[in-house]
Amino acid sequence: MSGWEKSSKAGEFKSSAGSPVSALVALGSNLTSEWGAPDETLLRAVERLGAISERLTVRAVSSIWRTFPVGGPASPSGQSVFANAVAAVETTLGPFELLETLQEIEREARRVRKVFWGPRTLDLDLILFGSEILMSPTLTLPHPRAVWRDFVLGPACEIVPDWRLPTTGLTLREHRRLLVENFANFESTAFWTQTVANGRR
Ligand code: ADP
Ligand code: MG
Image 1: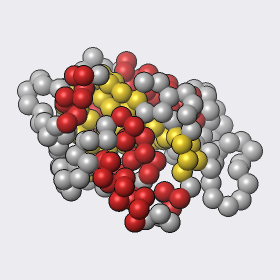
Image 2 (image 1 turned 180 degrees about the vertical axis):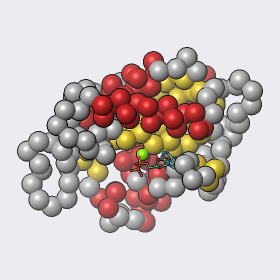
Image 3 (image 1 turned 30 degrees about the horizontal axis):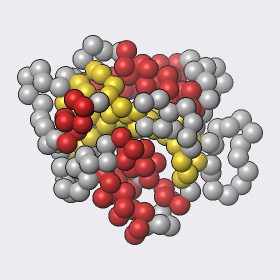
């Protein structure tokens, strides 16, 4: 972990030929697949993330956070239960290559589904890529909605609280405090609760 901590301080550090960049990936699922229930799907996704490319290494994984939908009974099939986690990786892939890799894993998870295709079987978002700031039709960095989502900031603060966003200059911990203190009624904060379970570090 010490190598990771060093590089995570420098969301400050940039990709240059061959040198690894720290990136932050958010994982979400609320549908059971053949990989299992949402928790298991996330854990399998982390395993795939670690295995899919020699140029990609998983450095840290948060615990899994889970919430239940607001109002109405939870679906008997479990579809409405969300599981979220965040993984810190180090990679020599570029940001677009990393996004394509995440999309490949999303497709793998969806491909094994028998019942029906759900867009949230597995959702992998690229939250931060070093200190990269990017706005393109296919990739925005930092992820524009991450700072509004406690289900991203909460798990992220377990593993890389001091990572500074290149856009705001604030750390993930500071963003989380802002969100929770000022937007307590915001949909993404009020109903998310931490679960301990199954997180592998
Ligand atoms: P969402 O994650 O918002 O629920 P999708 O997973 O369907 O929606 O992603 C839609 C598109 O968002 C993708 O095709 C991708 O090109 C684009 N996108 C832009 N920026 C990012 C990012 N930082 N991480 C992941 N996808 C992104
Ligand atoms: Mg996505």
